[in-house]
Image (cartoon, rainbow, N blue to C red; front, side):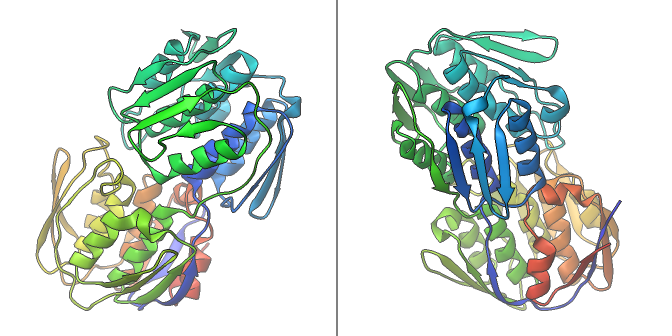
Length: 415
C-alpha cells in the first residue's frame, strides 16, 4: 500500500487552481437519475468517490462516461433502482440516489450506509421526509425499501440540520405533485449548486441557501449541462498550507465568499489574506497567533476544516481551543499530530492546543479524509521526513494534491 513522503520546512509559493467540489458533484450526479436523456457535467474532480458513484449508476443500467473532468451520463436505460451494499458501504453519499429513484421510478432499494470513522450520521430524517411525501418506507435485511405511486408535496421540518437529507428531499420534491417546504434546511453552498442544476433541468425551487426551501413539483425534467462549483474545503486547505509554511500562495478558481469563517480565523492567526470574488491571496507570517474555533453548520466554521486548522494551531505562539459540535468522534488525528510533537489535550468534543516552536517529522497514519489533509499540512511544516500511510482516504476528497503542492515548492511524493 502506498504512502506519502514529505520533506518539510519549505515555504510554499506560487499559484494553485482549485478543482470542482466533491460534495456538490455527487448530488448533481444523483440528480441525473430524475429524468432520461444525456446529462453533461463538467469540472468534476477526479476522485475515488466519484468513481464509486459511477459504478453505482452503472449498476442501475445508466451509461457513465468520464473524460478528464467531464462526465456524461445517459439515464434513459435506468432499469434497476437498487444500490447494493458492496458499493454503498464505501461511501455514505450513495444514499443520495434514494430520493431521485422513488420520485422517478416509484421505488428504490438502497443499502443502509455503513459505519463512519468520524461519528454517527443516521439517515432517519431522509426517511421521515420521504414518508411525509407519501412514500412507504421499510427496512429489510439492511436495505431501505421505499415505494410510492406518486409523491405529493408536504411541509417537512428537520429536527436537526442535515445536508444530504436536504439534498435528497429537494430532489424527490422536484417531481412531487404540489408544493414542498423544507424548514430548518441546510444552507451549504453545495445545496445551492444542486438547486441551480435542478433549476436548469426545469425544477422550480426557491430559497436554496436559506433555512426554508420551497419546491413546486413539476411533471417532467430535462437533461442538464452543468458546471460544478469549486471545492471550498480544498480551497481552505490551501489557505492553511500558505499560513503554516509562512508561504505566499494565490488561490484561483475559488469562491472566497464560501470561506468567510475560515478566512476570518486565518487572518486572526496573523496571515495576510486578500480576497476577490474568485481568488484568495494568502501570505503567511513567521508568528502564528492562537485562535479559538467552534465548528458549526454553514455559514459557521466548517467541521471539514477543523483538522486542518488544528495543525496550524499546533505551531501557534500560545494556547488555543477547538470545540467540535458537528461530529462526536472527529479528533482521531490528534494522536497522530502528537506523534509529531504537538501538545494537544482533548476532553470530549473540546481540544486544547498549546503551540510548540516546531513539529518533528514522524511516521503517521491517516484515519479519515480531513485527518489526512491535516497530517499533510503538519508534514509540510515539520522538520525532517514525514511518512503518511493509509492515504486512500486522501484520494476520496483531494484531486491531485501532491502535484498541486509540488508546483508550489513542496517536497512531496507518493510511493
